[in-house]
Image (tube, rainbow, N blue to C red; front, side, top):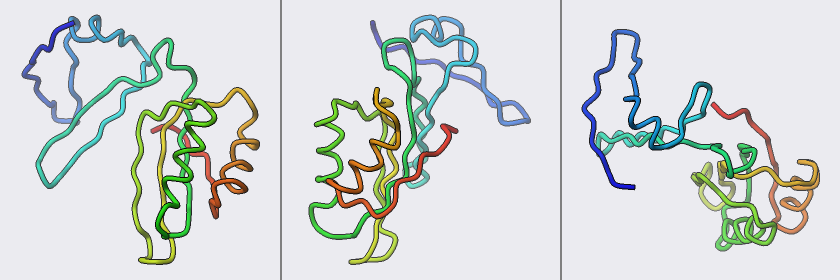
Length: 135
């Protein structure tokens, strides 16, 4: 598939219409979920489809961890070990040298979410794991 550029307009309620050809090319249908990432520093936003066929069910996690070297890498490695593909990830330091929060959108594991929470806490040293709705 090739890249295509579309100029779209935002209406007075903040809505945009994604052109039909773009929806067809990307497999976007009614009730498809899209992820928008905005960057106010460079005045840019990217909209990507998530949860399309073949991507499995997605979950959003907010993981609180200690702000120490290697903490994020340890948790990310566990996702790889569990063969869970991450669609989005963002880490933020809450309090320098104390706590950080890692937000992840990932495939849902086949096992119960409680098992994933326990693995992230026991093997990844996560302080807290919260499962959030995809918004």
